Image (cartoon, rainbow, N blue to C red; front, side, top):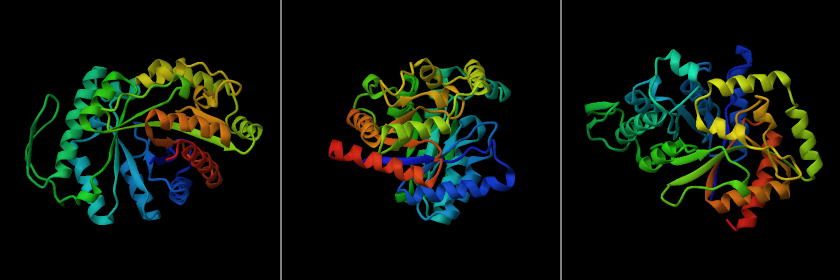
Length: 331
């Protein structure tokens, strides 16, 4: 079994009076397409993801917000309180995407000088407090290097069925180690499947973040892809600048990959290289994209976080590719 998540449009680039409706529209598409949930970004330049999660819940029946949580923004009790309150008021499950890093300039502005691996130590402590508060009605005492609480009790109590799933970036050794300790889904930005390795079975789950453009005919898919993501000198320069101030290991690893083009692999990096999106794309015929997806599934990937949907129709095409991939692996 696999789970699909889509991605909420980021607030940058939208007029204020149109953004809320776009978020609701994408959420409705995602739910209709059978997605389990929807990723909501968080960084210094974006609106608050928890406010967006309320919009998504109001406009859908079952779609689960996957909220990016950066520990330097808020106390772990506040996160647990948000999750428990949404469960109590809305009966909706929330997923947590635990974020250890960020853009260097953002971290400096927040006066966060914590080294890379230590940020994952902090992330483990932070997430442990959140999940223990949500998983047990007993008062919690926890003493860590970065976070400590004493006889802390969460109200309202959390229904067991709505305790959130947890995702952690798994692109670095420290990220993978944190996912193992937490029993979380380790998510990475994938290389082409024939170059990819997923960690051993001691991880609870593995996932990838990837866009998909698939059509019945190979040429039609590539025509859509190149029209939607044309090469852009300004975008390339922005990408290069971002590389200089980017902290996450995945950003540097993805930038170092060779984009060999459609003759070699359906894995396409032009949208990422031109700063149009933050993940690779799989482009090609249903058959070819399904073969690549099937390879990832065979490697152990069970969670797929899709890029921001371009349209409701695009999600339909994506589902066709996934259905053929699942048919190929017999899942």
